[in-house]
Length: 200
Image 1: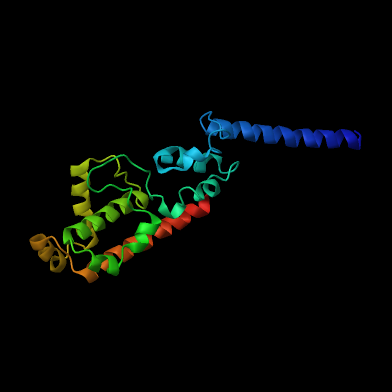
Image 2 (image 1 turned 90 degrees about the horizontal axis):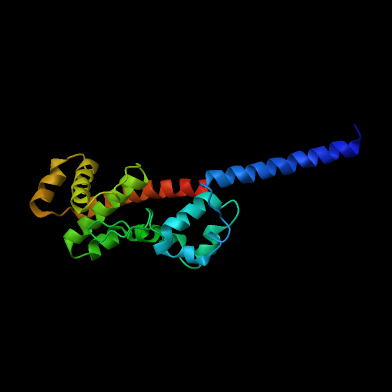
């Protein structure tokens, strides 16, 4: 065999492998195309979050979706969980990396409505339950979310009567104790967030 023939054969195999990979990627995406979908800025708004997440997961090898969308909806403002239309209590859209930074002792002390701060803590517990532990809370209705949030709060404090007995009486938790809850949840959620960012 001549060197020229071997060279042509070599390049043919490479091209064939690339085409096969492209075809395999297309089938992995369920027969959906990246081009003319994931290169459109319309996917960057929060109401197109499902499309955005699909594009990040399936088309980032072809299109820099996150970079394109950063100027429209920065990643720090995107909720950790998929954007939801749910309008009841314990909605998850409010918990983003930026919001999470603000859930600290300063936020706790400035929130005069003590039930509101407990509600925020429970919402973050629910987000943590799905984002870190993988249990889908977004399929739950308002009552189910409220019941699970209460259970998670009690579990976090290990059913400690010194914390929960006053809580049962007043529906409040001391600022320092709540700050510990927020700090633990923030650390765990951000660890998961950074792990997922490395995979993209």
